Amino acid sequence: MGDMKKLIFYIVIFILVSLVVNGQNIIVLDFEYDNGDITLKDKIIKPGHFPDRKLASREGYKIVEISDKYEVLYSANFEVPLTIFTDATTEYGEIKGNIIKLNKTEFSLVMPYFDNIKEIKIIDKNQNELTSINLSPKLSPSKTTALISSLFILGLICIIFSLLYFKKFKSKNK
Image: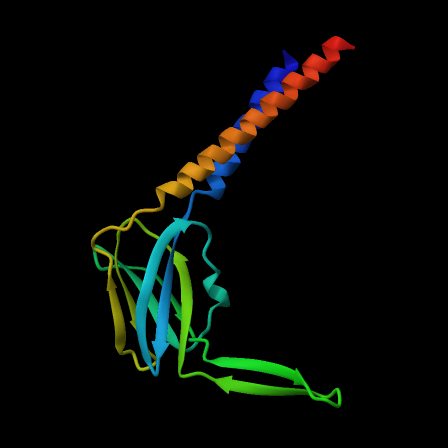
């Protein structure tokens, strides 16, 4: 009976940890930059963690999440990745570097998702609004992700029960 109590304890702990890990949703926004114009290509909501905004740029563009009550839910600065640093070796074995400046690129931003989000705005360095993304038809987190997480937990529980069963079976046969 002691093994069964341990098993139940470990299953409960595992489920609680799984719920904490999957407890936060993020929104991933894919953008296209073309000579100063930023346009949204795609958006998706999924479980995950967003980057610490303390690590974000202090300059550049600003992205703002606004609630249905017109309150700022989240904001962070970002820079569009327009510079590529390259290194190459010459035929004499010397390493030469180069910088490539881009006029067009694609990039993604990851932000926390809030249930009461209404829109997302992108503001340039001069405080001009470049893009406004209306999220009035509510996006919903992917149900397949929740299903996969649930099946993963169920599979682990089955494996644990199987291992305990075979362990008891082997100990009885000895």
